[in-house]
Length: 517
Image (cartoon, rainbow, N blue to C red; front, side, top):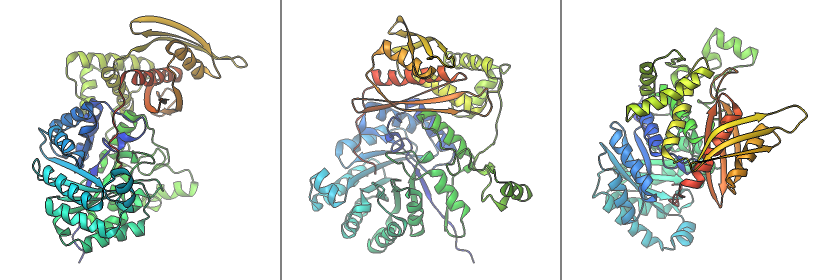
């Protein structure tokens, strides 16, 4: 007789840890839109941010708490009274709220970061959990850098945290140091040695510095962990986190090995992946498992022949099961405003006023004049531009661009910018039309930034597809990403560059929570 399958809780931290990727900051509206996509996917817990980091984070968490009804909404907090109070305040209005508090437990962190003795760390953890329980019955406690912590100390602090009221205990591999066999054994040993372990759900949060985040998470699940913290596309600080889509599909595909399954509606995985990629400006690599463009592509003649005869000869899951080619609607220049609005609502967008709808529809019509078929990916890119333009005051606006490229001659670009209400024009030569455009822009702005990354991706297939450009700029240690899309790559590049410049010039640097829990 087959043992009953237990539930594996999916805790998504795209909006918190994912946003700690260099340059991956999101606006409040973008975070709400991603949260709605996660809710639609039936994610159990959405970690919406770190409320004490900034007023912007606090407001975004509160907006998500008031918008999401089906998923638990969570805020991160250090083991400090002020942080926990901020987290509680940000979660007001939530249908289901969780406070996630943490403190470092490894010898190196306690000595050099906290400058605290182990006994003091335990007492602070207990105080934090006790305080958090004053606001909600759903409290998660994390042992930061558990992967390098001493087992005896981990068991001691976990036992005390559970006794104080923690309902979830998270064991993070904060620096991506663990390997699967050892990490699985760590979870097994903790569950065996902590006397009150049966009173809490045990969770893991693995980083991908050695490329083992998913493998470590799955090893932990096999040893009794029943919550996995993960992100869409594996987004996250440094090399990222365990990818939600890989965790979900691994346990679902290998039910012969895993005694768990999730409540995730996998049909929404690919749309969520595209949304997060579009919002953050972080493209998905083509060979990325589950959501990469090549994930279900077959070039080998032998493979193609086998798939045509029987799909399961070379495919262990169906593309449709994770959202590829699901429910696609094509719009065009003859599509009306109602069809446009209906599709955007289906994709998770809301319009606060008719004026907002008219602005978005006008941009749609402009795009439809350039491109015959408008796909969901085009709409995501269009709405990302709308929301970025609304969220960040544009001190610099692109009014006109002419680029000229002749074989054997230096390309030229002429730009007209509106800078704080005044029109300025410049012409520059470069190694290519994009380089010339950037130099012309910078000759007017004098930004002092360094270009760290430039990438182009086709949003859809075909030669008339929009190009989506991501630009990463750095200035005085601060990193921002700008994204732009257009059927003209040079124009898309200029839009992305100017968007990044506006972020550098306008938005203050957000305090870092000092953790990758």
